Image (cartoon, rainbow over all chains, first blue to last red; front, side, top):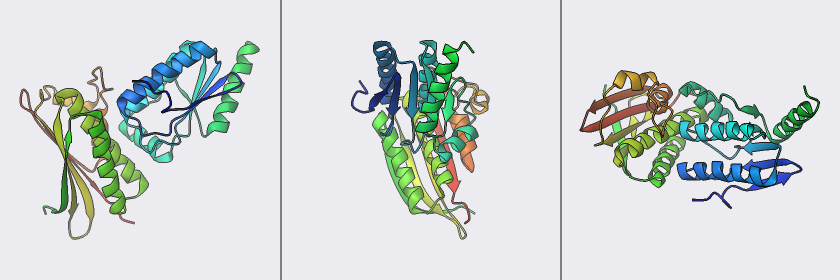
Length: 127
Length: 139
């Protein structure tokens, strides 16, 4: 199954912005991961911002897919930031014992875009 | 004192769509009972984890969603029942260290941390019944 059309991915300069607005079933989450990695390869994006403002719940499976997507994109050389996690989602994941290891987060899309461009600037300055 | 069952609804869990359906039912009930957002997220997420547990390990099962009440409070009780392989090392599963291809090993242990009451009965080769309760927080 493809997530095309289900989860829109916008291109802003060399950064991709994926905004998840649908309730995620496991197969859609898996398809999203594959699609986003394909899109990175095709576009050569240097940054990826995943906006999860639309998600009312994030269970351990979806959290793992998001974290893995971030780690995979980072391995490909694309700085990834997950943004827009709702307070109740953050509280629930921490209470469950889930650590979003290896993934950067920011409060909102603006913060995520700023962080991505910071990371890129640091890379270019060799810092 | 055993709480009174106000309403009760059964969801067959045999596909991913059923997982979504079960957690929607729980969310709607929690909203109807006036649960706060954190409590709604906790019981909805626990439902998602435990339904997936059924789907992944037993392929099918049922979820019974009940509104319960005592003299002073209202709550949600959810029972997740399957006739799957059962859990051999229940201590390890509850400790959260038991991960499989489709889970982090946080499904059962994480759910336990999200609810007020948690009971698990499992017989290897016969199945598993997990019952959780979440009470409305006093306002």
